[in-house]
Structures are given as C-alpha cells and as structure tokens.
Length: 292
Ligand SMILES: Nc1nc2c(ncn2[C@@H]2O[C@H](COP(=O)(O)OP(=O)(O)OP(=O)(O)O)[C@@H](O)[C@H]2O)c(=O)[nH]1
Ligand SMILES: [Mg+2]
Image (tube, rainbow, N blue to C red):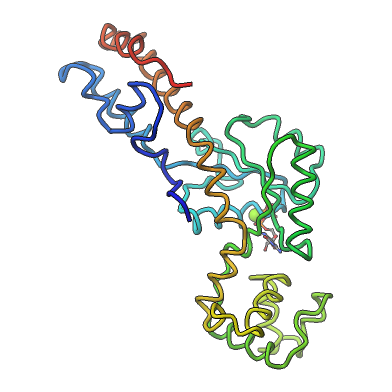
C-alpha cells in the first residue's frame, strides 16, 4: 500500500501560509499570544488536522455498510456510513458513491448533489460479475456515462476474515474437487441445520461465490498464500480492489486541504466580524491567500 491516506498530510507541497501553518499545528504562532484569536485558532487548527472523513453514499442495498467497514478496516479511514446522521455529514471531506451496476437515474441524481472535486465513484460488489474483468468492463461503461473514473471493488472480499474452521472446510472441499458450482444454491449441500450446511451458508455470506471459488483455486494450486486462514484472507482482501483506492483518494487530498482552508478562513472571518482581534484576523486573512 502507498502513503497513508487517513490524514490530509503534514507538510504536503502547495498550500498557503495559513494552510502550511495549520498543517504544522502552529496556527496560534501567527498571532500575538494574548490575542483573543488564540482559542479560535487552536480549535480551528485541531479541526484542520482531523483525520480524513469519508462519507459512503449510494442507493440502499448497494453494499454501503460493508463498504464503510472495508474503508475503516483496510484504509484506516474515518467513515460516515449510511444513516449516520446529518451532524456527522458536516465533517465529510470526501464522498464515496457506491454503484451496483450501470448508473440509474437515482445514481445520477445523487452524484449531482455531491461536490464534484471530492467524489470517488466505485462499482461495488465487483465479485458478483463472474469474472473480475467483466466488473472492470461494467465500471468502465459506468465511467463513460458519468464522465468520471469508476473503480471496481468488492467491499465484501475487502472484509474477508476466515477462521481456521472455515479454512479447514475449504481445504477439504478443494481436496474433494468440483470447485464452486455455477449456481450458488448447489453449494448448499448437507441437511438443513447441519454443521456442514451452516458452514457453507456462512462462507457464502462472508465471501460469497467468487470468494469461495478464488479460495478453492488458491488452495488447489498450492499457492503459498493458501496455507492458513490468515494468509488466505489477506490474499482475498488484497484482490478486493479496495487497497487500490489509496491512489485515487490521495489524488483528492489537495482539494480536501483547499476546502479545509476555506473553512478555516471562514472561522477567521466570523471571529473578525464578532470583533475578536479584528486587526489580527484581517492581517491573517490578507496575508494568507487561499490555496487553489
Ligand atoms: N457479493 C457481495 N455481496 C455484498 C458486497 N457488499 C455487500 N454485499 C451484501 O449486500 C447486502 C447489503 O449489504 P450492506 O452493506 O448492508 O448494504 P447497504 O447499502 O447498507 O444496504 P441496506 O442496509 O440494505 O440499505 C448484504 O447481504 C451484504 O453481504 C460485495 O462486495 N459482494
Ligand atoms: Mg446496510
């Protein structure tokens, strides 16, 4: 994985005097120590340095909760999931729109409401398209229709966390041969309620047909990543497309920093309007032009 993406990054290139001071955590050094702006600047400085907040949006059923979990677990991001309230949404820096296939009208409408410079669109549940390449082709068709890149990801595989019993069951299935049936229902052999059946139901729920197929193939080919539950889970997570979002998220950090500076300047304007060290605030606002 590349550079961490869970912060706006200290000392990143670019930015105004104000945003550079904010990134370095020394905003209060810009004013007299007795200035009434000190508490305003320390609060605004803490807010400027908060972790990157991603809000997951999409139509119901597209896998938003699973995506929120994947971003938290894989990329250590602070994530605002669906239904986590309007209060949390004011902290959002980046919006991740989850599609479930070619964009529908509701997807277009939702995308139109989001800040276009800080949106990332993904085709979720990429594992449900059979071959991964088919999902990539659908993502590319989505990108053409929306006029923005669309990345194929499986948020479910990104959360793969098989236990040793599941690993043993997969190993036994691989030894018996036959692979994952094309009809997922045929995978559910065993008497209803039996341990065998419950295990298989659990596997379908946790990594679904594509995950099972991939796991069986890795075990059958004696891949070095398929010798225990931990390594196999890691291989599935690495293949989920979620780690590949680090680059596109990183590309948007400059814009995120810009909007955080806009917010910081807004706080200073409010403080000046309220008469708190107006001269100091105006000097900061004049001397520190917003980054573009
Ligand atoms: N195969 C597959 N299934 C997924 C994936 N992500 C989520 N799902 C399944 O899709 C269903 C809905 O997932 P959620 O994450 O709750 O999606 P949501 O958008 O929050 O949906 P609602 O809560 O129903 O509005 C669950 O059964 C998930 O297991 C994925 O990447 N692949
Ligand atoms: Mg949900």
